[in-house]
Length: 88
Image (tube, rainbow, N blue to C red):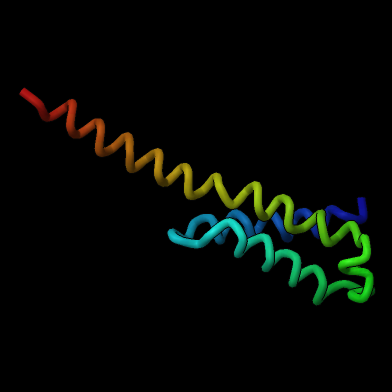
């Protein structure tokens, strides 16, 4: 229950950075880690086993892929659809 905030912040970072084309997967991961370290009450515990240091970057990394993949899929369907529909 204590990690819900970290997971939510990581999810938001991953999703919104995933909407930006050209952003690598490493960017949301590091941003989520840095944000959690900055807002943590014990930032000195990061790098020594603080679970928030894993709970935020992991969903940021995983969720980053979905918005960009959805945009790629829609573009692909549009390009392929036009090619096959407009042929006579």
